[in-house]
Length: 534
Image (tube, rainbow, N blue to C red; front, side, top):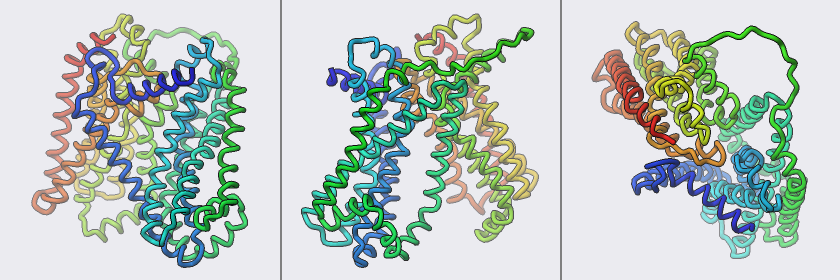
């Protein structure tokens, strides 16, 4: 039974990555798409490994020369653990307790512990992938810095194999606590978003300070080692490898594997109760109110907004760029003098800085992806919206308006903040204010087109659509190219050879033209494609 469940989970993973959802899209991806997906994944892996490689390269030799090699492996364990925990805690919540097939599987004569185990195996594989991003650079920099014995390599591998069990125990436990905390609240989506933003805030704060931490580690390694040596588990993990201490290895394996076993027992006992809990069952006092008729467009927009607010995965993955753009806008105003000093130090005029601002704002827009999964998220309920007495064009317009109404005000605020800080010339002000808005509208169109061409309705969990679908990846790639290619062209080849105001005016007109053509396609051919979906 477990093998069958595992094969089902693995097949679902493969379907989410390599198979479309309906009609033509149920065929396997072409070789070109598969190569593109693999290239994107390899790039992300390489970027993370380079980051960790730089980090471990700076501390490897100094620590071993100072006789505190154990601290090197302790820091590796802490870094890998943090990456695995942050990368899987919310995935654990959605995959274990909020999967769409939970009730179906629980209605079958299958022990809940086997359902839980099959999903935890997939999460364990995800943790191993995250760990490799830190383990491979740590191993390479260690081998480069000092002589390595065969026993140390074996001990390092054993620690690396056991470490994901500790991460899993905490990520599943926290996912269980979050699911339990939100299962009886009407605002469970809001609570999940708040938890997620807190985790992400801590994550980005840590990595923004990583250079400072590395410098302190290099300069104060001995003092830090003296402080951490009193924390026995941390010392055991590091010394098990550096000192090839068998007793410390056994103790390290115990503190990694035993919590996982206890956590699995706890979750097995509560899986049914949490997985089948009614969401948002808080009582609401009825208040008589007058009914008001609304237009078709406002009703469809309200429908899209309710779907968005009910899905934390959708909010966080599609709309996090809105939060970043808002933070950037406020930072522009607060750090006005610092930004002007940087512009002056780089030798840029205010108009050239305005060009960089436009590209920067457009880059923020390329990370906002409300329309890219919006068609696929209809799932098996697609027939409901298609049965309504509205045209497909009206349904698609509602999806576009959701993206534009949420994104455009924030981007406009950021553009106004940039104008306030830089005070460029009048033509540049026009481009700074107008170009990002049309980029918002164009990127909304691109996301919807990508989803219409690559829909997926047989998903098990919304995470598959919002984070792993081809339409989302393409909706990120094409806007990025629309920003990146002109930016490279201007700053590498045309800076100083053409007026910045003239260049940005041409770029703005191209965005307007692109928006017009793509919008016309959606209202004609796109509506026909939507009519044919089933």
